[in-house]
Length: 228
Ligand SMILES: [Zn+2]
Image 1 (cartoon, rainbow, N blue to C red):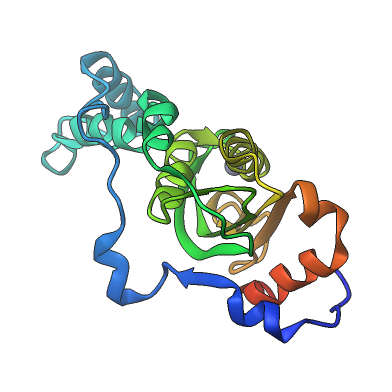
Image 2: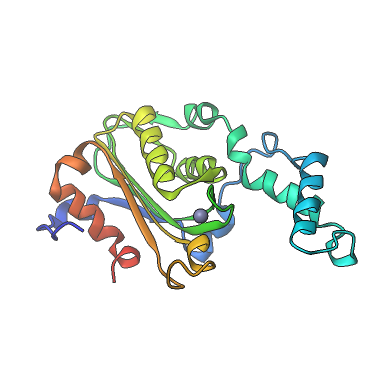
């Protein structure tokens, strides 16, 4: 954590931030393009799930498990649907020329992803900020970019970097900052970490990396969820 800098209140007043975590706008959470999502991984995946159930000591054909292979094949298809998403198509139509040059921050974007080491979930929130240089992106597009990368097998560190690098590439802003705060079920369920422990990762480019004041301003704005 960077030492708290003196904050220029006038800049704060003009800092644009929205919180996507509020219950009121949860229903507005953008969905992935259903045409691109695979509805199921198919019969081969179902057979593999049945095999796993058997290897766990279960009887895959007992009543409670009869539909489980199909459900798992459908669920995994949904949770990995980010591979089939076209980032170009999502971002191309959502970028606008605009002279706004203060920080844009979307806080508390809900995150659900799967750890690639154990195929167990990690979940939490993503904060995405950038300082435009003549181009802005529709605010609803930022959660969609997060989902494209979250709906893949991931590690939190790479997810953080991929989101930041994508925004840097498409927006060419003065800087991008992505901070992810998440709980890893593969750690808590397996007893590797205390239940409730969270992992915080960040990736910063441009002015967020170079200027402690800008970085400090960002961290102040997201502190209610990241800090104690
Ligand atoms: Zn894991």
